[in-house]
Amino acid sequence: MIDQRDQAIDAIRKKLVGKKLTYNEIYAVMDEIAHNRLGDVLTTYFTASGYSKGFSKEELYFLTKAMVETGEQLEFKGIIADKHSIGGVPGTRTTLIIVPIVAAAGFTIPKSSSRAITSPDGTADDMEVLSKVEFTREEIYEIVKKTNGCIVWGGSFHIAPADDVMIHVERELTFESYDKIIVSIMAKKVAFGSNHVVIDLPFGKTVKVHRREDAEVLKEKFEYLAHKFDIHIKVLIHETNEPVGRGIGPILETRESLRVLEQTPDRPLDLEERSLRLAGALLDLCIAKHVHEEKIKGQFGNGYGWAKHLLTTGKAWEKMKEIIAAQGGDNKITSSILTSRLGNYCRQITASTSGSIKTIDSKNLTVIARILGAPNQKGSGIFLNKKIGEPFKKGELLYTLYSESMYNMREALESLNHFPFINI
Image 1 (cartoon, rainbow, N blue to C red):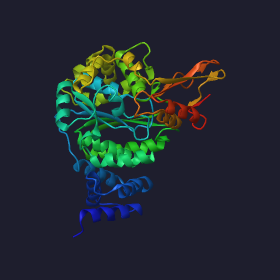
Image 2 (cartoon, one colour):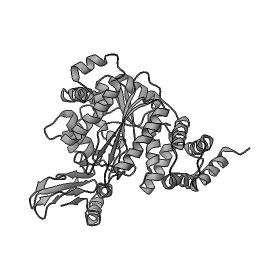
Image 3 (cartoon, rainbow, N blue to C red):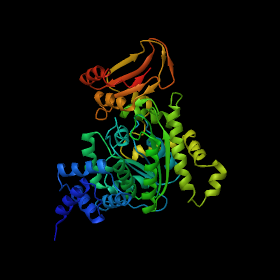
Image 4 (cartoon, rainbow, N blue to C red):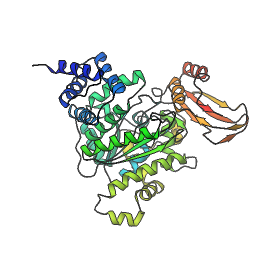
């Protein structure tokens, strides 16, 4: 009888030449990867095969199911909400706003977040600015019991462990296949017990998904998997040509989110609006299953109205402080305190002529932010003083670079000619 390792290797051979795999074959691969028995080379072959050949819908279901079943799972009762973005858009830190809004509404929202793969930072990197993000399953239960929500790193215990190994491969190669994005997201949702999910799916020339047609295909696959796992889902597609918000990098992006929660005059209104639309869509899904649906609709109209109420009255900010404290952070933190923690090496880039910003290249923006030190250097990154359509005069500030290292700053300044991220 063929052993599991041999079965996994045979499955990888089949996938490399474009053949479809059975559940048992995919399970063998996922189990070997999850327990670090396959090795880096074979894991890379399998990860790359998904990028070049893709997977059928049935294979996507098998992959998701196997990823979940080869790791630990969380179980919560009732309506379990979640939101996830496919990523690829730097400076769009909506999760830190959405989770406290939904938790303040009384719904359970245990958020499993990722670290950066191809971006300057992931949600887990940003939440780590405020609190710990690595917890055991029992600790997560306790945090959620206290606050209704959490924002934790999914790789801190064995939730879909094969996914985290494959992410390590992708991080080195700086790419993700569309199918792998879908499986990675849905495996974490299923493992965390989520049954009401909103997916943020941006597309644009310089983000992960370039065309609306591709976004529609991804949406269909998300909906297929959601149906297979009995999850209520809403996929929101929108064109994105620049960051939502102005900060790029862990502290800068976290500061933007806190400004929205604090409702400061200098908060990024585009980030606020995107967060409200996503939170509203998620609350709409949850309201539809709530015993007080009519009362809620009568008071707030819809999920968006409820989300806005929770944000503008400060209830979401109070909830976020509860979550920060429950995760071992300082609940007296503010956006102004975060400003004092930015990298000591700062360079302001001014305009050599008058004009306006025509385009922003998210890929090049990511390259420069990572050269500056993000995400490992929390205080490194870029602040966009001007965005698309905003006019400026000669000598006016366009953007500001931050780094915790003089070497990184020097390298970033030298790289701007090769990776320009604004077009004027």
